[in-house]
Length: 66
Image 1: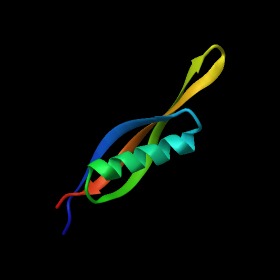
Image 2: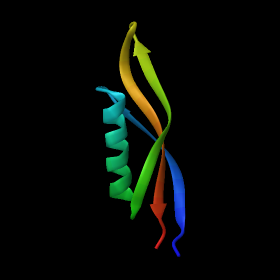
Image 3: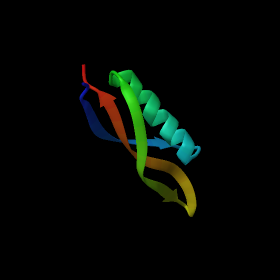
């Protein structure tokens, strides 16, 4: 039997939502052991001067405890 934990992180990118997700998963995998899944809880953009300056995603990351 295994036990998993879910943690919430926020990741950002100047390129796209997809890139923000990639960056978030990459960083979570460097910090947490046994990352198994992630789902996008929310998406936001930061607007400056009438243009999108940053894409942000809120991720729920699942990892299995040892």
